[in-house]
Image (cartoon, rainbow, N blue to C red):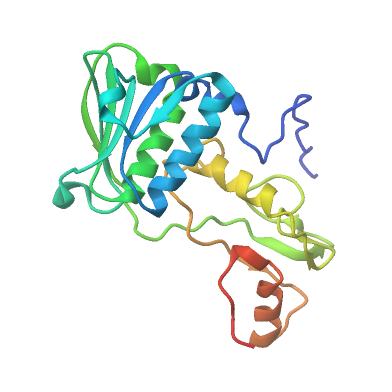
Length: 227
């Protein structure tokens, strides 16, 4: 007997993180002391949240005081590239990382905590992913299987990637879904880290060239494959 598919409330998309999740960080003053590609992602997330909720993000340390500080400079041996240290003291929440990935994951942690990230005092905590390679088992079928359906595991609903054997091309929705995993809304494992890979099914079969052609249809989600 098949299980019923849950129907989300009006205005709720199971693949998109609601804007209200960013209210706590978006309504506060944040100092970002880092530069580079991952730091630009951190700044973009914060800037979008602040534009919506009235906060401010800057790289000028003299323009304080600040409610949240995200900075590079942690112990590389203890934190590695993906770890971060988190603490709250004297009315300020601080995330320190040795690598830019860790800084991004530290932001994810603060967003998940919401208002709790800005209350009371918190002793320093160190967090880092247990696994260097993380894969999410969607098991999307390229075409709807007559028995197993479109998605065999994970996300409940139609595939975010495929429709009737073709790539959907809706990259904005895929990125929004990835953001939900980053912020821990959907994953059962410890959230707040990037997902590096996902498998898909091709029950209709095909050789390696056939598979590569299908992968190329995902466009900007994957690097180019040889013909």
